[in-house]
Length: 362
Image (tube, rainbow, N blue to C red; front, side, top):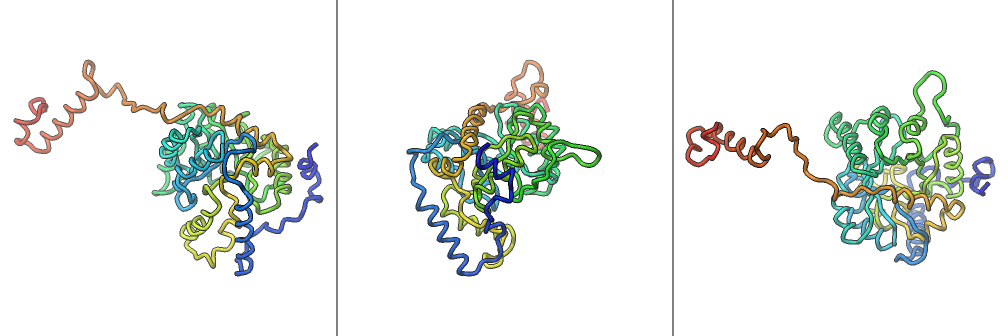
């Protein structure tokens, strides 16, 4: 049993976390937070040297409106600079950022994983990663369903939607546990009542389901890992390392704070716990990742294994028109041109007879 698993079995031995909540900060407290962030940034060397193979599986770009604070191109460039094996762009209920990320990844020679963070109204968020063209299609259908149910900017999805479209889809799921993990989560549905989200996720994705072990600094890393190992044992879902990335470098945290205030319609002075308490949600050097997960290196190795299964790329996509809409013996381009000229003749009667090739057939 590892030290982390031992702590999970004996929660009373965990160190007390001093950052469980984020009350409104005084000027002194804010200065302490800023000093901590600057220290974190100064002790993390640039460049790919050293560290362990790693692929980031949970990363929001600025296409996650008012949440992500870096462009997809910046995230790709930084991941390539740090020597990552791959980077997943997983915007919130959206695939909008993957096109720019795809072009940047080709330029930098980095493997891009196409995915999205899905946020059902009745279950924890889940990151879905496309392994094949068919899996990408299922993910796109899921997002489209949620968008059609909501006003512009919204995405209304439920656990049932994910179970329906995620079943045998080829998608890999990474559940994002809440900051305060419920230790008494039952591993399976028992008796009457609503199904447990973790059980539904596991029944849907089977061995393609993981729990994100994200160390975001609200509590000490060792305590958070102990909580997550306990949750993993109780649900039967294995852990994988992830960083909940919202920007490519720690200095971009200040912009992310401003975006949060715009989203929440508040000021920096009154935002309080609505702001992230630190600047750790960036792409870390691999040496730093190895240090943080030193007690459980298998969680880091698992990121590369998952990335290796995500073979889908946007180069596989092509325009596909329904064949049944085109008469036999006619090409799609010819038939489209004919319909266009017919429409013009109908809209401008008497004015297109001499110039419209299809006017005589209108």
